[in-house]
Image (cartoon, rainbow, N blue to C red; front, top):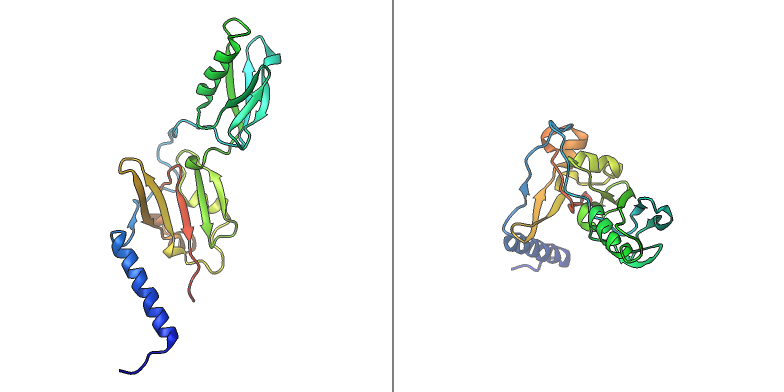
Length: 214
């Protein structure tokens, strides 16, 4: 049997690894059902969870000196008058308002507290992350009724060498307790206008766009 060139052997080895990986993951990625370019019926998304670097306004009725405009620190905490290092990340605005109310009740009687989110970043579990061959890879806040088209507009579309129809969407399935992988046809969506290639996104989705091999 003639000796194969080293490059061919390496390519064969890589192909074998790739095939093994596909078998281990249960075969090719599935496709998500198509979504309308404009939602037929708008509806609220999941309740907002405060994340690091969010901008908040804390309002205390009849006690404005106890309120503040604050940014959530990278460690997930905030400091307001009379309250130091209050954990904020992972809470809804109403949950944080209740925690602040309990703290302030040590100093004033029956405080009424509201927390307003002015600048949104959200936790990673509420962001959409787009990486790979796009004009400007980014993490963007999830919005209710968001589709993959909205996400691609936000990052400026595909780069010149993107293999859009080889893109993948990684989503954590809370019911199954594991990650699921889905096929995306970004080339058909953005270059051919195929509406069936537009799909709904969910908080925490990761879109990975490889470069073309040619």
